[in-house]
Length: 254
Ligand SMILES: CC/C=C\C=C\CC(=O)SCCNC(=O)CCNC(=O)[C@H](O)C(C)(C)COP(=O)(O)OP(=O)(O)OC[C@H]1O[C@@H](n2cnc3c(N)ncnc32)[C@H](O)[C@@H]1OP(=O)(O)O
Image 1: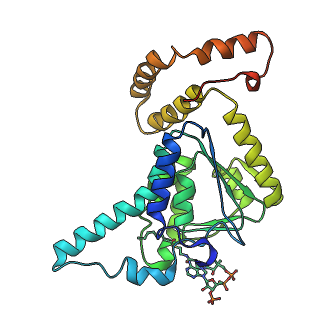
Image 2 (image 1 turned 90 degrees about the vertical axis):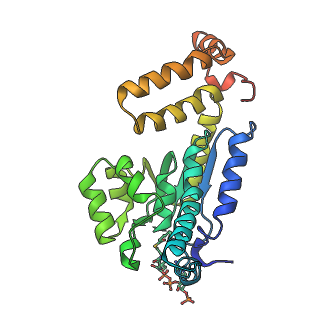
Image 3 (image 1 turned 180 degrees about the vertical axis):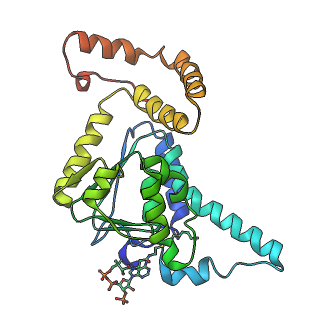
């Protein structure tokens, strides 16, 4: 058992398998990710760094470098798989969320935390530039580039209120129990809606984040030229006209 949920990278194959399975499983419509114990995560296991990352195999610099690159791609994939998964991922963060934890939550769709939560882009403190997603995704999550730069360059802790005001999280709860209830309620709201609409929304939001408005609109039209043919539109519109909740509609698996 690793300390403080610091097994993030050593379990990256399990993360990839898990989210690939979720992506294919039509019984699953939404994911809630949380951490057990005192903290959400203390980042990578510092006792593993030497053996995992700093002892690469290879007969010369080219081969060593290539092997490090392959390893980094593998680590990156552990979090990119969350973003690629068409099912929305709600992450519930309590206590510390350090280093690789910030890489992880940046790849999730909805972030919420407890009042005692704090976030730290810790990598500069351990002598490296964050390399598994924070530097790429966090600037797209938080509007202020200056704030992202400050956090990443100084490794200062950001507490819950600032995380909320900066847009890193959208909700702050008094404690973990309240947060988990809030996360599950939100997941229930998402799961009750058309999975065709929900998954199309996630996929198009991420596409649009990384493309121009024109490209995003083009992709959207191409997406919906088939997805608008779903029976979910008629079922949902009928329920709306009858002033019924979308929760009253039974949608086929998707
Ligand atoms: C290729 C690389 C890819 C990805 C890279 C990601 C980079 C990162 O994730 S950088 C972040 C690395 N993590 C840290 O620097 C966290 C360091 N730990 C702390 O800041 C603190 O320990 C704490 C998590 C805030 C907890 O503080 P506290 O409640 O005061 O407890 P402690 O007494 O400090 O810790 C208890 C016990 O846990 C051990 N520990 C804590 N974190 C880690 C860790 N990340 N890896 C290994 N061990 C950890 C700590 O050493 C203590 O152990 P004892 O044996 O009880 O002394």
